[in-house]
Length: 390
Image (tube, rainbow, N blue to C red):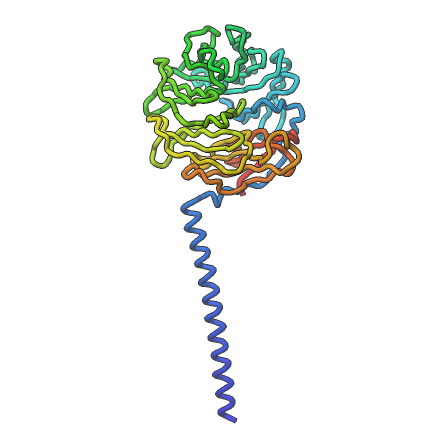
């Protein structure tokens, strides 16, 4: 009897010990997974980049879908969202309380297809530039919403469509760069804020131009993207600085991003100034150069054919792109995404946001006064949506 009792106690003890070991092993596996995840998260913070839909920010049924919108903070600490309407007006919204500040009606005779802004630190004002399809350019003072410059038919020859414009800040003065088009025709023109043509740069025309100020070198550069080339110019000397080769191939020469950016400039962890270029449709590729040497650092071709309408940088580590497999002609017939691309290797990390049945026009990162880093998106539903980090 005593023997049976000891046997039972021993059996019970072994059972409890085995159970304890199983629990320890289970805890060890969980902790191991957690440690692996922590290590991955430390090495790649894309794990922390997740968004949730905060609100339908603005019902913008009157927004002209083929024109970009602007987000900036004014010198009187108002966070503005600015967009153009189908009736050729410009609307200023207060981002914090979502109130309409002003609608500047009938700004142009024709459709407004491009908006730009720059901070005029000397005069403590934000200047907004609007460009219309009949080559009329206007600059607005965002302090009082008055037009300070009106250039009619900035394409002086009057023959070609003006594709792109940009602001340039040099020695505390602000200038405006204007490109005719990308068919190797007109030179890049530079105007001052008095409307005077001060110089021409023979870049052979461009689909898209942008300025870049290198703080280390204290030098301004103009970037020019045409159908087959991507170049930079020294603003002071007017000479070509670098040609960034192999942006495209002859078999599918479509590099257009229309009025959105086709390239970005950023400084990476190695403190190298890098230039990114990518083709928006077809066999899309992603390419990186050393901005100052012109050396091609990497080129990654994505096998799947898809369509990119807009993109934005996220903290100089990732590129966020709007994505559609079929393209613009399939809008409303498929799901669309914002994809996250790792700038170090060009890999598509993950789909950040899914938009069922709505083609996306624009995605923009901005700093919200309450939520911090956020995204604004706009698509065929004509709703500007606000997304904040989870």
